[in-house]
Length: 253
Image (tube, rainbow, N blue to C red; front, side):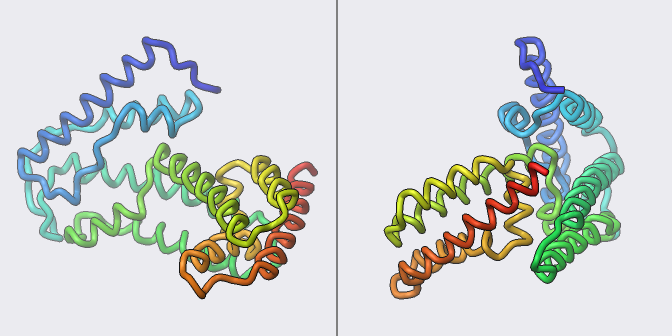
């Protein structure tokens, strides 16, 4: 169900976020190791990253469960924290693992001509799940920082996907401008990008070299003398346009 952001719901979210952040500050004052603390959040981030009511209710319940209570003690890994905080971080990791499993299953269902790319992406997801499954009490601060990099909350994942979507569009136009591509070809590709959700586009980027080539050309184009020729870029874009057409037809059944 879509979220209807009325004044009461917004106020409830602000109170929840304010309380959560205040508890983090109290834990900082108690001497908890910085790496162990979850990131502070904002109401704006939650509103931008969570789009259905059920997920919002789950996230707000999770934030309310967070507590600054408990005695600060050293873990096996030499990290200072409370028992409640370690348990909270384990809960966060379990939720992240659930998200990654769903992403893994979506990638698994994709039929691609390039199984090696698909396998590489899945191996990366497996590596993230393995790290998040480790006993956080045995990790030192450096290892917990790695743990944090593998952990995305629901809103962080949505924001990441949407940022990728915007960046992909920018790269499409940057490459086209550099290579002076025909406007009709660029417009055709841009209109097709609009038919994918951010998550779908990221999945295609992970499994299709024609999509991956957009970033590769962008990176090469930023360095004088390393960019592809205009003809090569046009050939890549024509292949991308055709592949997008196939993927859209597949989506539409």
